Length: 101
Image (cartoon, rainbow, N blue to C red; front, side, top):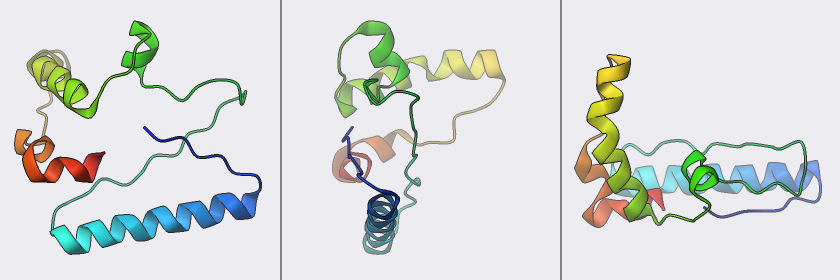
C-alpha cells in the first residue's frame, strides 16, 4: 500500500485524476478487468492506513502473503456468506499480479 499526502483539494483532485489515467492505461494495455482504487480518509492524520489484517496482527503483509491468506479463507467466507468468490486465482499470480500492487 502506498500512502500519498495532499496539501490541498486541488492537489487531491490532481492525484485522483492521475490514478484514474493510470488505471485506464492498465486496462487498455492488458485487456484485463482492473478494480477501481479505493479512497479512504481518517478522523486523524496520525492514524495509519492499514488493512484489517494488518491492524489485528500488527505486521505488514506482501501482496503474495495477503492473496494466499485470502485464498485459504475463501471457502470459509463462502460458507458463511452463502456467496461465491468470483475472482480467479490466476488474477493474483504470475504476470497479472503487478496490476494489483
